[in-house]
Length: 340
Ligand SMILES: Nc1nc2c(ncn2[C@@H]2O[C@H](COP(=O)(O)OP(=O)(O)OP(=O)(O)O)[C@@H](O)[C@H]2O)c(=O)[nH]1
Ligand SMILES: [Mg+2]
Image (cartoon, rainbow, N blue to C red; front, side):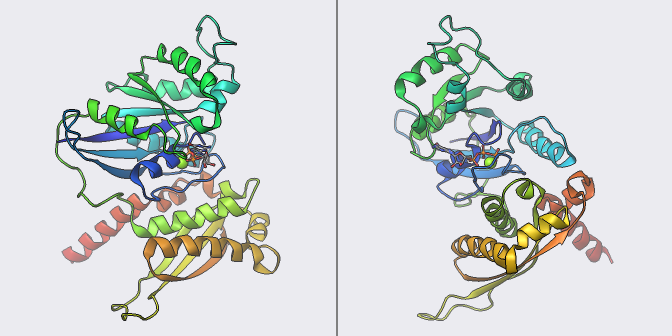
């Protein structure tokens, strides 16, 4: 069998998390139309069955990452750190590019007849500089091809194939589930032989608590505009799973969840709460439905908003949001109690 880690990289909003979800067939990562939705690296595991005569069975561990952008705040730096962490252990990198943006930039052969280097922006260069020194193959994955015509796509693929030493250029539409099988096959081709990293039925390493916090954040991103989504963070304060087994034919059991939404200013708090609490109610009911389908229980969700001035510049606060840090701290605490 084959197995390996595949980092999913790209500028914000190119469709990294949508691709991760389409490949795993699960809602592993939240997705919104706003850039910089993802803040942590997110693991999604895919089992590929053996294909007689073509390739053996494989386990692919995809690692979705925050959209690469030049950091301006401490939170941005943390997001970039997550990208570096994903790149530290990987067998292959997928660089995603939104095909609608590249065509908009004039990469198509009509405007670029001599196949000259297309108009890479300095943000693109910044992204490519992250993979230049890596000793593993990189595929260029052109995303959202459902939004462009084939005759626009083909010349673009041809001109990009010659650049940056990509081992392959693969067009996909995560939304239309187009090109995903070819992508998986090409990935399996380059992965090393090895055993599974995760049990066969596990599709992510994220704790349920964190996934719940993310679903609430997704709801905030959808319900609010301007700077509010970027100034918001979610912390689960209480998570009570139902006790005992559900009675056959009875109502589904109830999970009780209390979460805090952090923002940076009182004005943002007022927006998040809305007139007579209407916004917070909309955020809550949108999130509750998704949490219910994740947990398979009914959910009682209580939200409250806390102002934490300038948290995006606070390293300590940002680190406290990270579930990997939370688990480390818990383990240290338990070890200390054990020693007593
Ligand atoms: N039409 C179309 N839209 C897509 C496709 N893939 C993603 N999108 C849309 O693109 C937007 C961004 O998708 P995400 O998956 O959140 O993008 P991302 O790269 O993870 O973004 P960040 O986490 O912000 O870096 C969403 O509105 C998606 O619905 C696709 O294949 N076709
Ligand atoms: Mg994302």
